[in-house]
Amino acid sequence: MALDLTQLIADLKTAISEIVGKDLTTIRGFQERQLKAIAQQSALVSAGILTGDITPETREFFLDGLEDMVLNFLKTLREILEVTIEKAWNAAVKVIWSAIEKATGVTLL
Amino acid sequence: MKSLLKLARVCGLFLLLLGIFSSCTVQLAPSYNQELVTGITAQNKATMEFFAMVALGTKQSTYANREPYYNQLIGSFDALVTQANARFTPRNKVRQKANEALKKKGIPVLEEGEIPSATALERIYTTLVKMRETDQKQGVTLTEVQAFKGQIKIYMDQALTYENALER
Image (cartoon, rainbow over all chains, first blue to last red; front, side, top):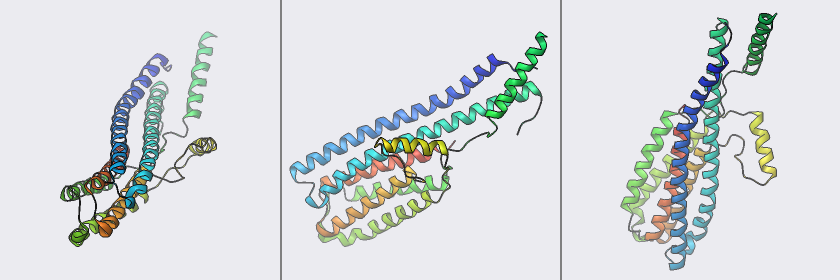
């Protein structure tokens, strides 16, 4: 039996769209939470330094912390995207294997 | 003749797909660890309870009362860092090449084997250590308490979001 290309493309689209759509919602939510929290933290540290409530003992620590948390936020975002790519790739492979099995009657591992 | 061409085309496609996908599925990130997620969630609760206790700031004179709480939290996060790092981290050539290219452009990348949630947990650990030192030395002002808490919450979100994303 010939491989049904139209069906294969449709199945691939469905499998990948489901994963990407779900993960993008998570990524968007994470990004919004982080950016808002980092902005609030920056405002708090800035105001605290101005009023002296952030003492010289902790000033550098909090300033370095702001830079560091932005960096780790971006690294986290990138790694989550990599997990999404992994899931989409694996879903696509599964769909293709299944289509080949159906067309050839050969069971693939 | 037409049917022969059709058969050849199907066979060709089959071999092409077989070749492309011979490596089957891939793993680009560490495995999900339910025990670790449960541990992080429990320590998140314990940390927020501690911050509720010191919400108005602290005085150096009463530091001794809080020391056991600091020690418990610091010890727990130290253990979580070890647990998060003690996992197989997949390595692949494409990722290495991409990292090299990004590094050349001055863009920070994850070091080989670095797990962002482990880094976030390590930063929570160092934040609590700094807070304990400050409390012991001079007490912590209300604004400093809020800033320590804010920093920990941001890292906690990074750690939990990443670990939950690993549940495929």
